[in-house]
Length: 349
Image 1 (cartoon, rainbow, N blue to C red):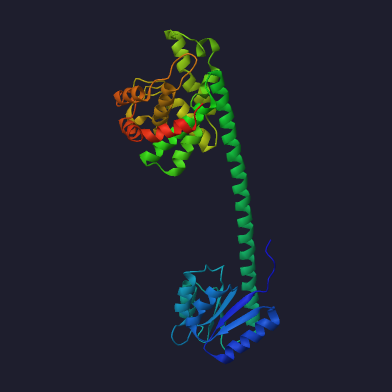
Image 2 (image 1 turned 90 degrees about the horizontal axis):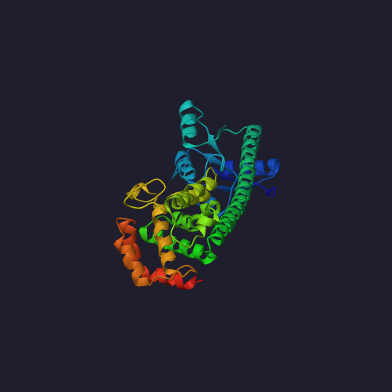
């Protein structure tokens, strides 16, 4: 909670007598520090140099009238951030309405009733004090919420990585495969021109693309030979199972992971699974992960297969553009193959 510092009042009136009366009154009765100017052009300068809690402002002055000064002030400060009391000898409805429309908080009639000045000033100083307190509490709450959100985000990312790693271990894959697929996906998303927050989220969600394999029987998941039709149908079910495992979660990151799990085996020509989506009806995250996952799978050696050469892999994927893969993404993939290879080397098994 902020300390109760001595509040500061700025007084602007072209009469030296008036500013002296007001300064002495407020400092003596309200225990504030008063600063007085007789030139309205100096008001903004004073406000820029230090913080004030209240402005007492005359209407009729040379160079700038009070309405013009209020217009300048309200471009910088809201009505609670810097309350303004208008000093006027002409308290008619036109003056009052114009002052209120301009952003004044209150009025004091000339010649001054010192009790009235003290009362109205004290009330608005309380308004400013409440504003500062509320602002401090809001900032503290925002920091607390940001901290909690960050902690939850970190926990969600950690959980996603651990679950994904569990799925990869069952599939005889490695943790580096998860990392590479995420890095490839981020690179493609960036080259496509996606917003940074989106391609970073795709990277973080990418490791969950095959989480549904947790529910596939070992007899199918680890089978060395070709799957028969029934086994292939069960294997293809890992997409829906993954989406089901991740679905209905409030985290945008987990929602992204669910979308990837469901859509990364769809094909551009509609021949993929599970929903035979085609073209741009396939979510962009699914199209990106499809390329990242296939590239890494083909170029990585496993106990049951040899790694393809880079040339063979690139040629295969180029040939499948417009059939399996988004042709625009394949074009970006080929154009940036050297960056893909740098990632592959940096995160090798």
